[in-house]
Amino acid sequence: MSASSIDFLEIEHKFIVDASFELKEFAATVMALGPIKEKSLQVLDTYYLPHSNPDFIYRHRIDEEIQQLTIKSRGKENEVRTEINLELGANPSQESAIMAWMKLVGTSGGYPIEKAIWVFEFPDCEIVHYEARHGDKSVACVEFEAIGASSEEEAIATLNRYENQLGFDTKTRTRINLFDLLVPQTS
Image 1 (cartoon, rainbow, N blue to C red):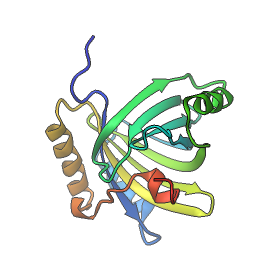
Image 2: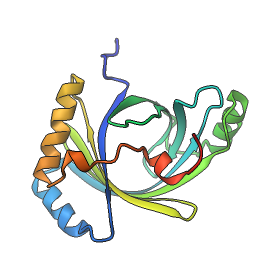
Image 3: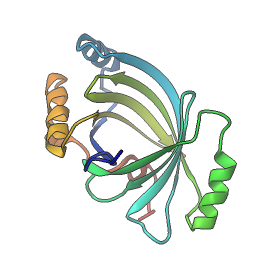
Image 4: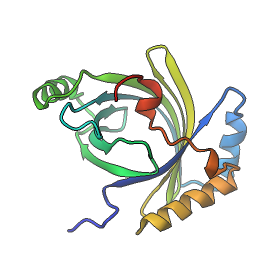
């Protein structure tokens, strides 16, 4: 089976929300759209920066459902970027093996980001509210990620449709990825 031109792309919009954001009201509005699944999880993402190519970043993700090793592009724009996930199985944690691997391939030490996420899954979009923390820095965000689109244009149109239904203005989205929002001076 061959990959399509967008199979290894993450196409998403991220909005930073502040303390005045009404999470319960937001969730009720999203639920009224009829998601096929809704769940809450605690997630640990540990990021590693390759010394040889700072335009990419590795992420080891583990939660109660999944464990993944991911490579993502990293740059000034996060709307469309490369994302390749390798599924590692939920248990046991591969943290020690990942750390040893990253040391051998030449990355900086791991940067852990803890997230409390609330996920709403639709056939064509995943909407997630999360609170993320690294050290003493934290941020709350709402992300819209297109699922199953056949083109970048279709994916972005999907994001815009959900954002409009939920009152988000695409002009106010952040173009900074989560890692760079929380982990300073790593460029």
